[in-house]
Image (cartoon, rainbow, N blue to C red; front, side):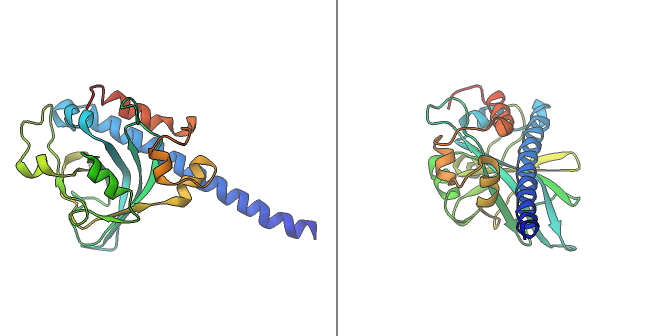
Length: 225
């Protein structure tokens, strides 16, 4: 009888550990994506834009499901400026999904970076589900050292979006994609049920295991908004 009780408990513990490891690994990959993107200033996100951003979403390795114009799905991390204006909050996990839209520049795995440029965009991303282009305005972001090449659409967009596939990094429109919280992964990271609002308000202590993304964001956003 004791063995019959212990086996399900061991299975659940193992599943929880696997989920936690996957969530932490995803955070590490997100930091690597950001670092790789920013290493070449001439082809990177302008540092002035990251300095002005209220929040940043990084989705490492978004997958394409099916052939041709199939569905797209990925999990990523959302981090925002700390309430003090200095440093970044711990990450809250998000899911991004979309149908027949231009996520990818060739290939079957794509890294996505979103810059949330104002409080309104941040508020919309914290809803139960936000659709880019409908609930929040989105535009492909400029690439390079400065933001002088921004168009009117980019200057007024709540969210600027980028995509990297097969080494090519560029601004890309993600209209029609939806973002929503991934609560189970948050529990895996923080060890208890916490809301995205609590995490992004700085009410939850940042675990050392996922501090790498906040550190990377701090590295590339040295200027104040």
